[in-house]
Image (cartoon, rainbow, N blue to C red; front, side, top):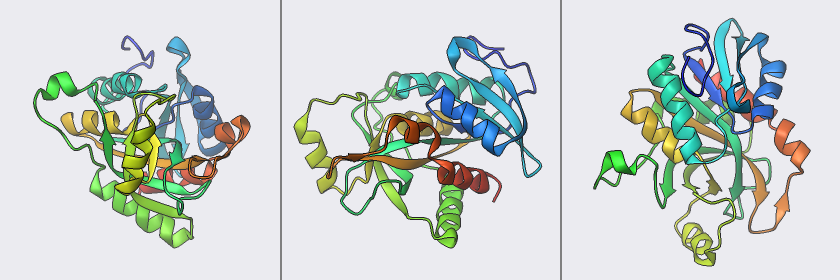
Length: 234
């Protein structure tokens, strides 16, 4: 048990899928895992452990933002021995060719800041995905014919961003999408020797203004969860 996770020793699997939304964690566990058992409810941040094709998997919500991700990723790795952490979440497309409901594999992350910055000091770390996980996810998605893009994403500190110039800068440099957790997940995993990947579903298309409904955001991401599970055990 830690400050933020009430799971007993041994209740967390080495493979952890991390949605931001606790309700998405419950939905994914009930839909994809055999015999899921709730392992965490502290602060409403739900977590479940079960089996997928015979393999143990934990689905643990991380909350919104890099600061929240930093807490849960560190405790999962350091205190519970998690070795593979895959973020499953939504993102906003920045490029015309990255469509609504497309999958984005975050190869690397651009950000204005990291919660890890006090630890890194003067080092400008480039947070990037574990290559083995990234390559497996890309191969599996292409084989299944799922619309998938791999590249840079922008991890934002703010959901309601007020700098109009940021989007133009990111679009000009080929950044695929914007989200709020991957950069710190990658930094934390790298520091503690774990593998990490973010598999994202486009819920908002910023160039056109299209967006999924709140209900679709919660439960409409089956393709993303399936890809994350197949990638973890490829």
